[in-house]
Image (cartoon, rainbow, N blue to C red; front, top):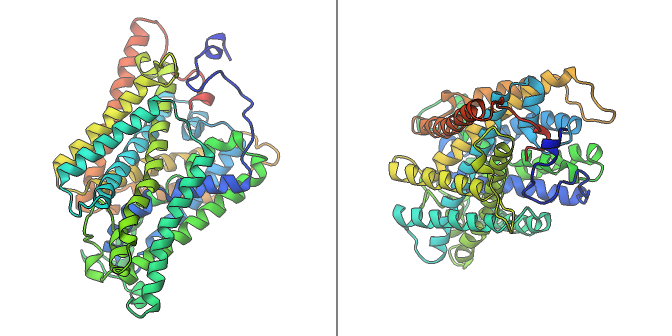
Length: 481
């Protein structure tokens, strides 16, 4: 490493390459499960059930299969290159093209922003319902969502980092909320009011065949399976990662998909078939309707919205922390304008990166809300899945390309056919055939966000070339995050 690289300031404190390995299998498992559960199941269950009817559990299972295949590639790469830079690192080592690396890194940034924006709208709707506003207007929801994003920025500016123990608490809250939904489903079925036979019934509102309907529903469900890839950033803090990381990753994915399938079955059993696609409040999600319909005489529906708030708030905070730190890292390496790499003198938070990512999120939420033709949560959750499917496609290809590098002794190695299947499946789910006509806005949102990144790269390239007489590229990709 050059002297310049070695003296780059670190927003989280002095550089320390020997991170304390504090994560055993139990803490790592809770981190992975909490990261996957997040806002996903609250946001998409109703919409995907509306596409396939009673077999709503099937898209979750297919999404789990695709995510698991991709997890094999991540596990091979993270044990071969145990640094916390994730997809950008693997892309750079595989292809060595700085601009491609930048596009992958900025795509990850955009996925964090769209995911946090999804969470903010979901949180806003549930918070308003929790305080007694059963049918909040779009304007009220918008203002609440924007205020929440500003609160996130304030917390981020204060310098709050990820805390595994705090994540454990919020994971328990998330699981309690989902356990309530599953418990109500079992109770309703047990007393004879739920129709369990519906879980084998396929219904498509657009008269699509089973394969295409499940394809569309799987693309929707994929938002609920993202998050596991964040765990690769914890590899340097995990005890004996080569041994426990693969087993814990697959266990976490398995637990998450079982919970999701049980939630989907509960939704189908409790909510009448014709009402699943049209929840009382599209932004709040269908799970609140399950609670209200399944247990009308219990006050659970008064508590559940606040449980949802806790469940998604942590997801949004982690997303914005990740996005701002990545922007900061790219600015420090002169692939984005240096002005985005400034830090607060006292707390050393990357304030310009935080302001930039927050403004993007505020603009995104406002534009999609004002457009009014789509559910904000549906549009933004779908865009998140779209962006990450693109990243997963590249990671699977990179896994195959990097077979040229020697594999360290004891490192995980995926069967060769799995990255191939993963790349094909993820690329397939990127296509317009995997989306409804109303979901085409996802491509507009994604391309608009990436266009912002390309413009910033171009401005940086011109500045580096014209003023500093230097090339534009990553100096230390291993420490991007």
